[in-house]
Amino acid sequence: MRIAVPAETDPAESRVAATPDTIKKYLSFGAEVAVQAGAGVASSIRDEDYVAAGAVIAPDAAATVIDADIVLRVRRPSAVEVAGAKPGAAVLAIMDPYGNVEALQSLALAGVSAFAMELMPRITRAQVMDVLSSQANLAGYRAVVEGAAEYGRAIPMMTTAAGTVPPAKIFIMGVGVAGLQAIATGKRLGGIVSATDVRPATKEQVQSLGAKFIAVEDEEFKQAETAGGYAKEMSAGYKAKQAELTASHIATQDIVITTALIPGRRAPVLITAEMVKSMRPGSIVVDLAAERGGNCALTKPGETIVSENGVKIVGAVNLAGRLPATASALYAKNLLAFAETLIDKASGSLGVQWDDELVKATLLTRDGALVHPSFQPAS
Image 1 (cartoon, rainbow, N blue to C red):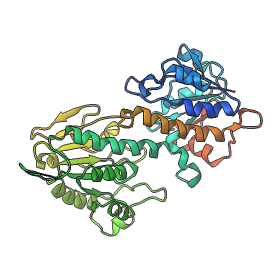
Image 2: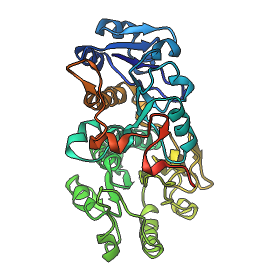
Image 3: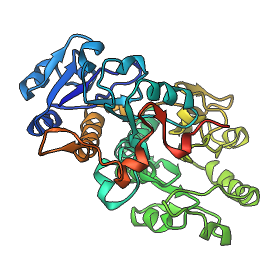
Image 4: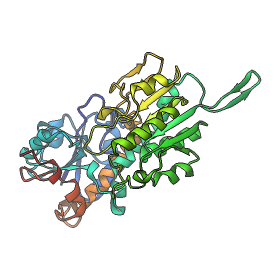
């Protein structure tokens, strides 16, 4: 069995899909691991480190994936980038499937079995495979660091002979994994932290971290969570009430971090242009949803802009990738945990159990066809 780890082709992607530690584990399964030269450089992993772990260094992508049974990537590869892999080879990556049916069809025609790691079900067995959580955790931390770096003042209260410096007020919008880590990080830095979310279960989580919970807590709010733990789309009436409360709160904040995403949808706009105008000059908005259009109406993905009234809006993308060594270490372990379920230990070969609930949830393509029911082309 051959496992391939090609380098990422997106110039903004600094992560890598395997580390020396995970490669040692793959070797223990009887696999041969090929890593493309330079694949780990941005994550501070040298080719020599991979070789010391037992991997073979291939000169280019084609030589890396040739005859591969399993291909490990961070972002979805193109059909060309998996050409040469064995028919039916398992390709594991963050596939970004929503709105990219044509790309998925191309992978299907390439004859590989593509698995979307971000579709992993949120069940106990799959916690160690949850790439959304591992990467969002780092993104939430990094968002506070980015906000603090852009903010022109100190975060904690400081009492000095020259006077007292007031603590910064930090507001987190969206209390998922990223939001909770942002709250914890903001508190560690000494900020006065508040947070909001439409899911009622998050109130206790916010308060347990020492932050203040901000929300319109009506009957709709009490029913605003799906069985899978995601936020539901709220009614126009609720959005209006929440927006009014949020607007008055945002006007008093120094750093606002938005994290709200709905699977398969454009990011909801939580901060309007008018809200930005109400903020003080020097205030910061860090938009973690920039890649999906942004939670702030003024966000420009990949850019930091300054509004007319002096508010900085940080539209950073791939925040987890700004901590490449840590992000790669966690992501590689997520992949390892899932890949292990696809390997027949007795024969040391690929042995996908097609009726496994993890496979059913994540499998996009098989035998030349796009098979996931959520991504069938429109008839």
